[in-house]
Image (tube, rainbow, N blue to C red; front, side, top):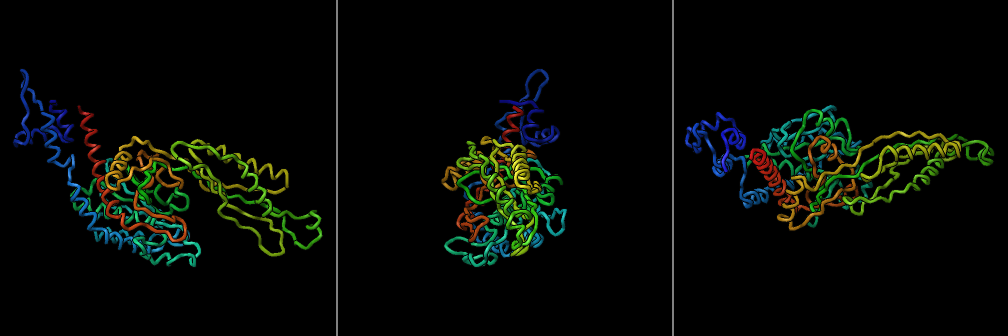
Length: 464
């Protein structure tokens, strides 16, 4: 097949003047055809030039694999340092862990900078293509959830311990292993001469509901763009296509305070127990049917969970105020506005029936998000998982809400989880499997290269 000079320049992603210079230098030789002696360029010859000029990247897998194995110890050490730097949401600012990432990036000779709306809670960018739409993006968050009861941990959560090939500690799986793997993936790409193919962003305040205006949404507003992304959550047996929706509502019940020993309370002529008002509310919302299923979420269903409760000011006082937090996860088939309205109607009905007063504040309201199985990044990761891990991954949505939906909304198709194996996320004795590090590094590096190559081939087809 042959192309005109204009088509050939587009095929190579260069200017016509550059193509003419290459011709004069003898780098390419077109055929001359017709009465006007027009140039015609062989696609085969153009493909050879693309390989030479690094438009299509071909690196032996053995070379990539060797680099990834060589960095296993370094990744492990960096992960240990990250876990030793507490960044509990609501307890520690992310500044210290952000500074640690900057320092590591400097050591690895990777360009990096902070992006912040709140100086104490910055976001981190590593790479040199912040606004580049054709590069690949690794994503993780900097904060963690609290530890829970320290006495229940096998080892102190901020003194990472390695036992049986597993590193234990708060944030190992969610999401500090992803941070360490991302930076060393960029280091390997830099050594290969292709740092421009990928970049990393670490966001603050994700654990508060994945919608914080100081975290990833702020970075996106500043112009972050990419061709595709991986949110570096743990596990490779499933390629996450998205997540359920999240609604968090703060429900406050107001009653009437009175001494529990008075006859008025005994006779129920005075006093309203706000805690009992919330118990009645909890009983009613438990009647809401949430049995829908969705083909992309397997056995996962919609759920509603009371996760926090506060009420009462004294042992002999009928509480006049009590508050709970209702955490609801909805499949894509359920309407958020209708659900919120139903909760409000339950409160109104209880007010009329028992005389309580309810206040409801919607704290978070994020919709479910799914990408197609046909997205190039999904196909690339699926093929790599089968080759590198000898596992055919499931393609489905995941339960936890996360920031992948924010990126999807910006036209950046994002796999919402692919990384080293790990367990007990948000639980006691959180850990990751260290033996997975070389293979995940290989997968990340090769995914960046293969996404680039896919884009090059797509451009060629558009010219042809």
